[in-house]
Each structure stands twice: as C-alpha cells, then as structure tokens.
Length: 430
Image (cartoon, rainbow, N blue to C red; front, side, top):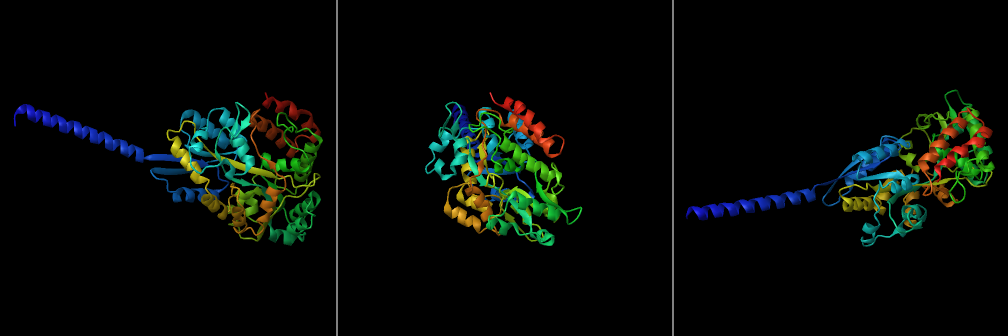
C-alpha cells in the first residue's frame, strides 16, 4: 500500500470517528433532559408528598428534580419572579390561581395551547370549569378557551380543624352536630371559641393565618367581598364587607383567638387550640397530632351561607424553559387522575378533575372522618379564587393585607378602614 492510499484511509477513519462521536454526543444530550419543578408546601409532610410523587414518576428520557418552595406566603411568588428574571427558575412550578394573570401578562409563563391541541386525548373539560376559565383566558381578546397557561393541581375549600379533646373539656356542643342541625352560626362559633379559650392562659379557641383567605371568609359570609361584580373596582368598603370585618375584629379583640399575624398551626398541633381554619392542604400535618380531631364546615354568617372559597392553583411552565415539550409532559403527568389520587389519599387536597369516582374515593381518605365538610364547601356556592385580568392582584392584595392587618390588630377602626381603603386599592386597576 502506497503512502497516498495510507493517508486517504487514515483520513476516512478520522472522519468516521468524528461523525460517530458527534452522533453519540447528540443522543446523550437528548437522553439527559433534567426538569426542575417546584410547589409551595404548607408543611414538611406536604413537601414529602410531592417528593414521593417526583420519585415515582417515570417519564422516558426525563430526570426530575423536585424542590419545595421556601415560603407559604406571597414571597414565594416574588422569589419565582426574581429567578425568572435571572434565568434560574424551575422549568415547571405551581402558583396560586390569583397569580395566573400576573405571570401570564408579564410573559413569565408559557402558553401551552398549541402543545395541548396536538396532544391526543387532552381536553380542557376534564377539569373544574372555574379554574379552567382563567387558565384558558386570552388577555388580548378577552376570550376564554384560546390559551392554556397551566393545569390545575387540585382544589380545596376551607374547614375548621377541631380539637375534640379540648371541645369536650370545655363542655361545648359539638360543632359537627350543630352544623347538621343548621345551628352552626357565627354566634355558636363565638360561644365555642370563648369557652375553649377560658380553659387556660395557654389555650385559645380559634386561629387563622394572616393572609386574604381567612379574613375573606368573614366578608363573604356577610354578603360582601373584595371586588365589584365585574371585578373592576374595590368593594372592601361596602356595608356587607365591613360587617364581616367587624365580626373578625371583635373575634380577635375578645382574646379567644391566636393574635393576628401569629402562626396558628403550631399551637393547634401542640394541643392548645380549639379550632384551626385552613384548607385541605393542612391535613398531612394534622394527621401527626396525638389528640382526637376532625373537621367541620365554616359557620354561617348573616348571608346565610358559610362564605367559603374555592381555592385552586396550577402547574405552569417557565416561558424560557429549554424543554417545552418535556415540561408539558410533566404538567400532564402531575395532573393525572392517578397522581391526584395519591395527593388526595395522603391528605393534601381534593382532585381538580371532574369525576364522581374521584370525589367518592376522596371521602374514603381518612382521617379526618368528616371529609364531607370539604365537599360541602365546594357545593355550597363558594367564592372562586381568581386572578385580576383587568388589574394587578399583587398591588391590590398588598394594599388590602396592610389595611386589614392594621384593623385586626386593633390599630384602626372599621370606620377608618372603610373611609380610605378603596382610595388606595383602586390604584391597582387601570
């Protein structure tokens, strides 16, 4: 073999080697998709639920890294916005329903309509219509059904987690029986709270966390609310809204409640709180307590219904994820009936899919024994949580939270609150 033929052969071998090397590297890169995803757990037990889901999901060619959010408050969303701006946010994350419009109109989350339309078997109608109205809303046309900003993880309502041992010690009527007899009213609730609080200096009757949900139920139950009917203006100063806030202020002023702003879950779990207002997501943590407990619906106010909320949140996709198709696959996997069943069984929330079978199964996931209280809340005209497409929810809630906090800590009166709050809150609307 002459020198030219040897050089030609070596050149061909080198080219073949480079081609195979490049091809192999491409395959490896395709197989090594890593998706980070995040939720905002209420406690460690709920974080463990989602870690177990992440560990059990098998998505071909995709490695999942779950990371629990570090805050139960709105700062969770603020952290996400900072990370999205710096390019360090997860590929998929959960956000509350109230924040969908803010994230969507800022261009922070991906519109998955085209991906969904190309997916065999997918249907918006598989989920509750309330959340899907907002998740499919197109802000450019004001039409629903034209976009897809995410899929709802679950739904929930509020209930009162009750310490049956403390209630028995206080000698009060069982709230579950009062509710069954149509006698679970604001007045009956106050009697129970005050009787339990009288058991000792370290015992209190009621506790609710310091955010818009717990104080909002008192406004709802009095026939009031946050917004005008078309959600285009503040309604915090209506007589009905102020009546609800007056009841809340009287409750905190009575000394029968955990002081507003203090976390009520630790005293409940330690056995020093009679009634703890929270959603289904608190159940995993409450299941660890050592006293007898159950749940009961919210008491009825002047509007003759409990004034509950329909809470929901959604899995959404980072608009700048390098793997949109894989992220859409993960969002679908996280919202299957099977995964939602795991979440429901472990106690965290109620399936967001419209299915009688799912709701029937939910009733069997005990404790608590009275799971029906949560479903009654869903059936009893709850006020749906929703974003402000024609305004800024973060700006509105910032004004509202500050003003309500001042009211419920006794720094301002209901009259002073009503005279000024909407002047500031209306700045959140165009």
